[in-house]
Image 1 (spheres, rainbow, N blue to C red):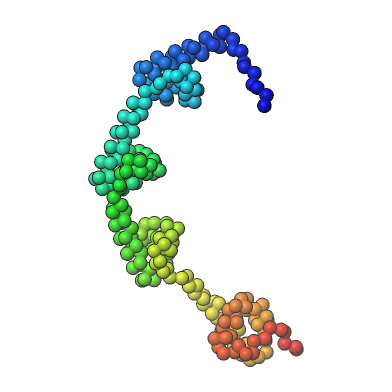
Image 2 (cartoon, rainbow, N blue to C red; image 1 turned 60 degrees about the vertical axis):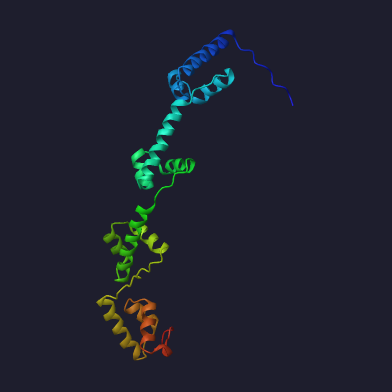
Length: 224
């Protein structure tokens, strides 16, 4: 492998680097953290870290440690008071993964009794509505949830939802009765009835089988 050539820096560049290192050292000795030093010098945090590593400057992390200690003490107090994760999130203004990582790191157990009681009550109410014959949208309106969340809860907790039943309109019923009367005479076929009465073949076949005329099912046109 070819050796890398050492770059010769000018005296101005070396002087600027020494000035940066001296300012970083003075701020670090004053107890500033990396983010505070980066803001003061208008540099990025990786740049400040590289300067500290190069010139062996130790930064005091006491500010961040105090904040983290205060945060996990507050989380522990809220957890001991019986608060759920969502309530702790709102109280300390942190995200769900951040709260969970603090609890795992400091071995804080969160009491899940409050949300479980609410979910159990919700499931009992949903089961009663489903047994009374309410549809998915009606249960969602009564409970105050979306259709998707209700469907997922029912599927997870094995709550049977009533299936949709499409009723036949009066107009379709009249046309089907007329088609059945004509078919019973034996002078027409399902294909002709499908075009004349504007009925689907599935409706016609189902009605013919229910009437006991399935043996005489005919698809081809009758000869004149």
